[in-house]
Length: 331
Image (cartoon, rainbow, N blue to C red; front, side):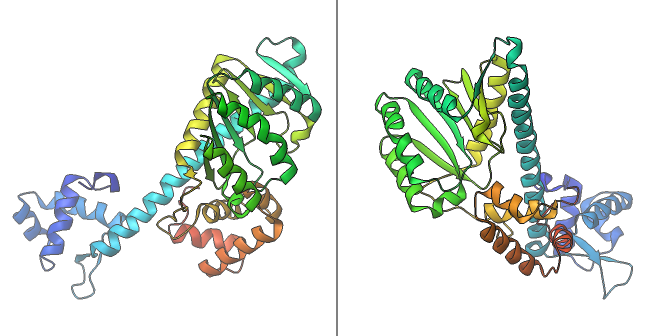
């Protein structure tokens, strides 16, 4: 039953028996289980690597089983951290691919690429976006990685969004968790959900993106400067990849009306993302941009994480996070 934690059937049986019969040596354990002593030793080696058995102080040279509430909880925390890190690597790979696609498309647009349309400047982007939204028939998917948005921006987008929803178009939007601290942005999201839109949030997003009917995607040419222009992509392979990116992040995102849960280490999504960025050497400014928060808030989050870890430097925070199972050892 514990294969997902790294225990095969023999190791689990040996562990259970060691908990029930702490005084048994290898030969006695093998006899009770009907297996050879070598198999018991192999199982104990696996259990030792997982931290489920330790050297006994009372019986030197013999191993003792660590209580499940300590040993298994540590394993679960480590596995959760590794899973989160793996998912993060997938997201970053997809995000990097999406960014490369948009940048390359922008370079190739002049070569009469039939799957690419280039828009230069913010006015051109807004005008094309308005025409696109009038043509959407079934579904619109979007990432909004700006955190709190200005009331002017929200007000200007409301009529078009309302038209889409009243036409029965399904609208799904992923915002940053930080938007929950903006009364105006939350009010706008509530307005949309009352009309039937679906809104979720995550700690960080890879890029701004809008997908119409899974047939067309609009991405900024430069994710650092969305006013520089955008590209519209219609290639089937590109759309498949971008839709997969949206679907994976949507599944991980939390509906706006729910409270964001903390992970097994007591970290919020924002804190877990900030910790990864902190350990990777990112500055407060870079962390703030990724989380959609102010520079001051990013510095406060970083300081609190370092205090919780008892670290006096960012490097030490990364080391302690790995030691505590908050970050994987192969990061």
